[in-house]
Amino acid sequence: MADAKYQIKKAVNGQYTFVLRSKGNAEIILRASETYVTKQGCINGINSCQINSPYDRNYVKRLYSFSLLAANSKAIGVSEEYSSVAARENGIAAVKRDGPTPIIEDLT
Image 1: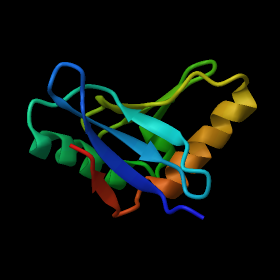
Image 2: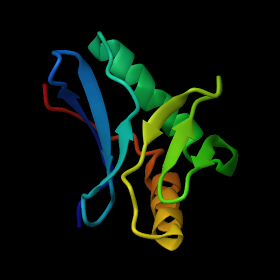
Image 3: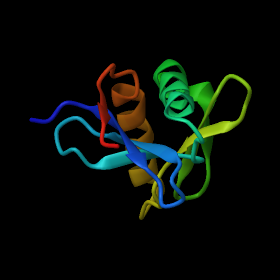
């Protein structure tokens, strides 16, 4: 069984981005809402996800997707497009569970 973890990657534009992989199946459950000029900026985005992911108030729900918000109300992570509202809710539950993970894997 895989641990939940963040992965830092280089984006197509040469900047940095991250994904959060789920515990167990290692599927991507959250993507950075933007790219970052520096790796430290990307790490700061991950830190914000770790802090804000456990709380319901930090999620903006769309019909079949969601965004995770930072304390300043800006999106820091976005979900995939789910097939149903129930699947979206399962995605939020997974991010709430796995978002606080301290594991960060640097793939750059």
